[in-house]
Amino acid sequence: KTAKQPSGWQPGGPLKLLYQSAVQAVHARDFGRAEALCHQGLRLAKGDKAFADLLAQIPSWRANTTQARITSIYTGAVALVRQGRFDDAEAACRQGLLIEPDNASFHALLADIADKRNATLQRALLECYRAASTLMSQGHLPEAEARCREGLKLQPDDAVLKSLLKRIRERAGE
Image (cartoon, rainbow, N blue to C red; front, side, top):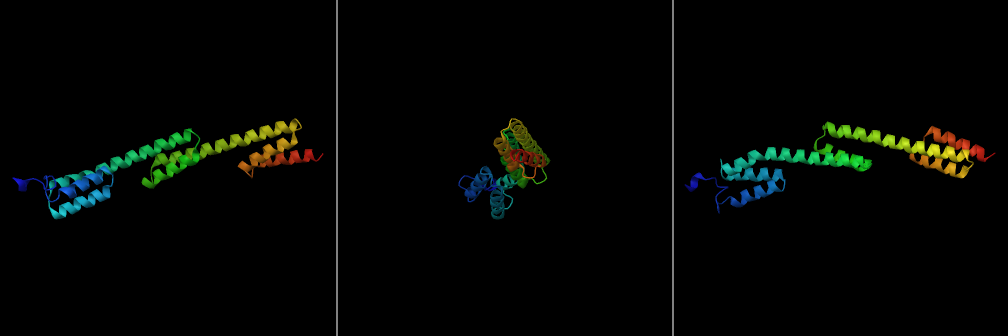
């Protein structure tokens, strides 16, 4: 009767500790180690049902764990985008792409982040331009120049702000 039971399941059996270690590795999501321990158990006890069953289930557990991790990373990245934390969101997307390089959701979110960054930058530049123009028309030239410089720090090659800054300086020189 004892010979028919799988050795990995036998209380006090010679492979009990090895089987328990494999189960612990699964729970720790260390699937490579769990597989190695199962293979070791199967080498020591050919056909052992406990090790074979555990080994057979590892691929689906690995896939489920990977998918859950990707979903968690993606959800976090979307939340970061909503908060305007684009650098952190981009880093999260890159982390997800390390796990699944062809994931279309991460690639689309990266494109969305780039668009949102650009839109945010354009709004900031427009605000600097409007403020500088208003200040210049009110005769507050040093403040107007400061607002132009603020915008040029965001985008040093902005032609509109450079042109406005030039006009402010010309007017100050009058």
